[in-house]
Image 1 (cartoon, rainbow, N blue to C red):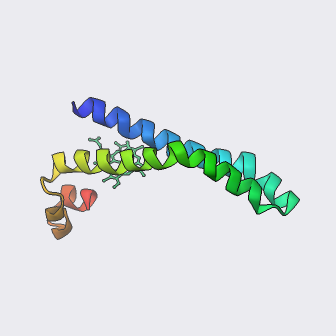
Image 2 (image 1 turned 120 degrees about the vertical axis):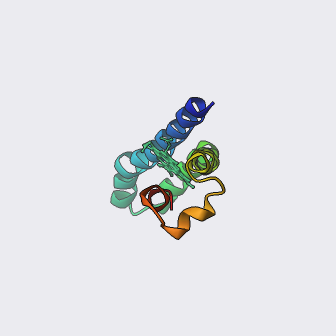
Amino acid sequence: MAFTVLVLHLLGASVWVGGHLVLLFGVLPGALKAHDPSIILTFEKRYERIGIPALLLQVVSGLWLAHRYVPGILDAFDFSDRLHSIVA
Ligand code: HEM
């Protein structure tokens, strides 16, 4: 189960970061050159359909993974040891 959740977490990270790299290197230069923000908005509108679910998947799977290390997660913010500090 943990392996599957970690794979989903990494797939979500790939979509989220990958989409923003496409935005940065593929879309933004053209928009800046043309002084046309609608180019960015058009990309964002299409990307959002997979980008936002990917981000939500990240948060949910990430909290689930963190919960395995510090049950309840909130206890991590007492920074009482290295594991708690890393999770916090
Ligand atoms: C609320 C948000 C998040 C939480 C709570 C969270 C939590 C975690 C946890 C606990 C792990 C360790 C999994 C394990 O090895 O057992 C992990 C790994 C990872 N996370 Fe997240 N994560 C979150 C969001 C993100 C985001 C937004 C990204 C990137 C866009 C990301 C990228 C990664 C990557 C690449 C790893 C694998 C590297 C490693 O295991 O150290 N995470 N995350």
